[in-house]
Length: 91
Image (cartoon, one colour):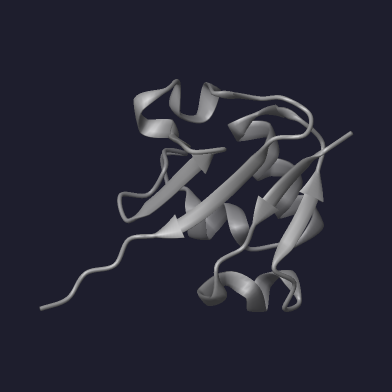
């Protein structure tokens, strides 16, 4: 099995317009690496220059925010869904 990554509208140009991408399971860092290998550019959009999750990007494994789990070391087992949620700001 694999992990399903939900792609938000703003990042769909990187995935050729697809709403979801399936990649092998592993840690969240592995999932991001596989996503970037399949569709170049995701790593730069999700991680900063130090390899940390960008401040204004939220990642969820199923319904759990990875910032409250193990961050990029969070395990993502087969069959789970990773959702990329860009932060929304405005006034």
